[in-house]
Image 1 (cartoon, helix red, strand yellow):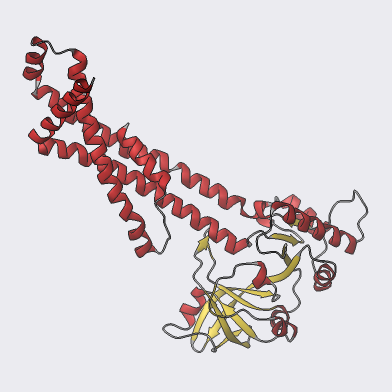
Image 2: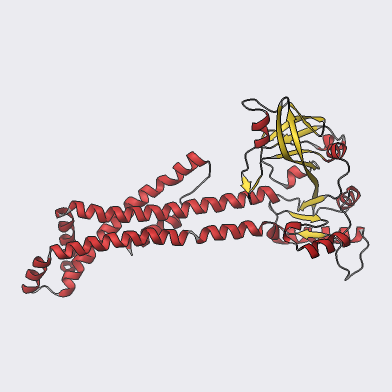
Length: 390
């Protein structure tokens, strides 16, 4: 048995040494295929991670939304018209009522938004997303404050004219300067910049770096009382579970129903958008991105198979005389087959190891040049190596 195993291995290594160029070509093809697979899996995983992180930044982690109409872009015109007619606007007294009866189950933060130009000296940033918010929003959502701070409760009560700006706004208005402490003008009013968000990127084709955050009272002074508010809510604990999140949603729904004196069985006159619904399109996008990994990897593997197959066919053709002599001397068909299969396996595993080494450098290069955090997982290593051997 030992002789049966060692003989094909020795013959395979001898053949590889005798034809280094041909063997290197086959191993290189496998290495390229494995590196491509590792690269594709790693890059797509990084994109999916980025999409989920962006969704958490945009919608909040474990956060649900209470609004007059929670998702107008995903509602038909007829349904939107029906909701606007049925649902009263969410007002500041509604938010105060929710806060009063929140207990320890839920924490609220209200926002209102509109587009406006932001000016600093002779520079202008057009159509920024100006958001009036309560100070509690900073604990409900991960706003990613890179410099300075978010405004506090006292500034909210005083309707202080302070602002936190996004990275795009900061770059456009204060190139090569620190924006914190400087003044921007919105709707003809001056706002002192107290914080700058880190760069958040895009989500669904919309930049997350064009925001200007200010206290809700200051927003109302600049633009008038908002037609309706959007309320973000979540359990007050750091990492709530599914049970706590459901309890918070039920508390918010019951409180607002009581505020509007709705009878049991009567339809809600407001919308509640759950975290899964708010981020569902991002997860669908991540799934579609993941589906691209298979075809791309298969194309690279198919190319490697063609190269290795041609390499072995050439090897068989060149050694037809040798094979005939060995058969005449008593070698069995399976002995000949074993030699070539072992030779192919050695080339594949060697190329696979080389490809994994190349693939291990990809995350570092991608992260360095794009800023997109990518991680080569153990699953990608195992998958690539298994495919190379198979």
